[in-house]
Length: 73
Length: 229
Image (cartoon, rainbow over all chains, first blue to last red; front, top):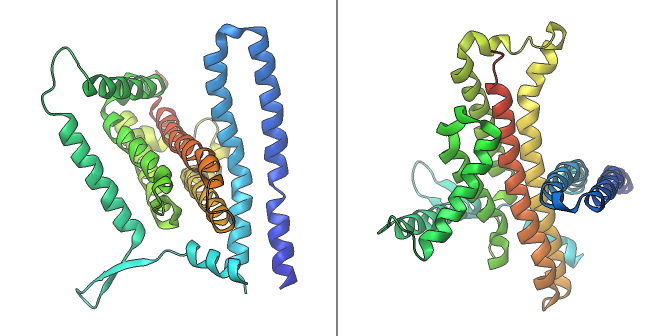
């Protein structure tokens, strides 16, 4: 029972990487917009795409945690 | 515990009905939802395409804006060679977009089912390889496994399966996560708060995931199609 909880908790720790990565990306994007406000549209698109892709690794951790909780007995 | 049981029940894929043929074929509800979305899209397409005029008016304007945006978006990535794949990719985009956001109406999104996303990833594998074979002919496609270095052959073969696998898991994980959070919120505070949060989880997240899925598929296709002239 407790090893299942431990396993799920460790699996969800991957969210930390996504948080840091997306935070860094957003800070660079904000800097870039401040430097050249006309490029806002392109920067926005690139940022959104990058965030969706980086979020995926956090989601993998979440899926594994859900699988662990519901499939292991 | 009450909440845990309810949540487990929600996460399973229920069987909607059973066709009484050959000893009963169970039809999961994601299949029925997909049929519903298909019927809606077909009827909408037929209704919107009646009486097209050369100078657009009304709903035809919106239709042209949408289709133009999608066409430009894909042509930019795929180049001229990709024109024949446009209808399929756009249909994929519309279908995934609608099925992700259908949670707003209280239905269960069909992409919450791992089977649906795995099938979509299967489409992606087949499409990417077919576009590569068509563009470079069979020998060129086999040769692409050896570029840029023969040492990378096992990695290239693995990549064949891992790229669509990541597509599948990303879509599944996002939709499942959004669904679970929305269910938990609805169980705790049924009024008011789900509306505001649903704007983020259901609509924003769903649209972005559909966009990312199709964007990545077309990116992989462009990569498979490029030949060194």
